[in-house]
Amino acid sequence: MNPGSSRRQTRPRAERRLAFLAAAAGVFGVRGYHDASMADIARAAGAATGTLYLYFQNKEELYVALLEEKMLELSREVKTAEGGDSAPWAVLGRAVRAQLGFYERNRTFFQTFVRERLEMKARLQRRNWERVARAAGRHTRLMADFIVRGQRQGVIRRGDARRLALALLGMVNQLARDELSHLRGQKFAAHAEFVVDLFAHGAGAGPEGRVAVSGPAQAKH
Image 1 (cartoon, rainbow, N blue to C red):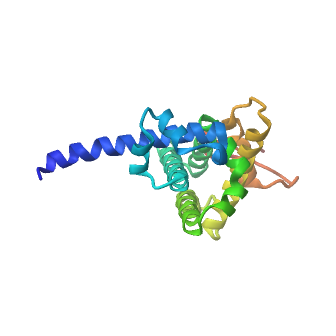
Image 2 (image 1 turned 60 degrees about the vertical axis):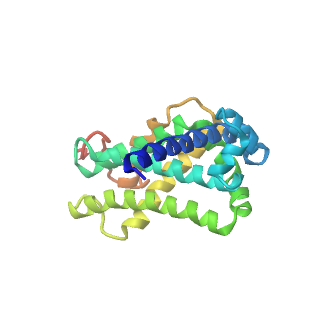
């Protein structure tokens, strides 16, 4: 087979798969996992149901693939934090802002995911939930890499970078869940400076400095 011909055949298939995933995000977001059907998703993508089954064996396989894709998209956006000011707190600030902004742009899907998460963990086959956990783990390692850079520069405390990343992501994710649940209308990214400052200094009432997410820590005197 002509290699050029093979690439032309592969590219449309990859594009069609992404189109199905985008349609699935919309349908799952509006109807939830239980009430969504493969026929609904195929219709939203403008395709026959049988065509959708050529890409995904069943609804669970499609749902897990969508979660993996969302985590990949999130990591790509957060990775852009490496551009610009390379000061560790500036990088973390941009990373947190990017993650919160991603949740906001994908609000409908993540509202449903947050609401159904515990049920889905029990419903999905173990191997499929492990796929989701691995995707989340890769994102945690990305944040841990940012923290390691700060540790090497002496501006972030020494210790297990993964645990520090989990603590930071815990704050980010819980604030996002709160916004998703209460629909206050506030921009998610508005929480970025609060999150990074709290991560840097804790919630103690002693002498504090402020962290500007657009630059390095600025101590008050």
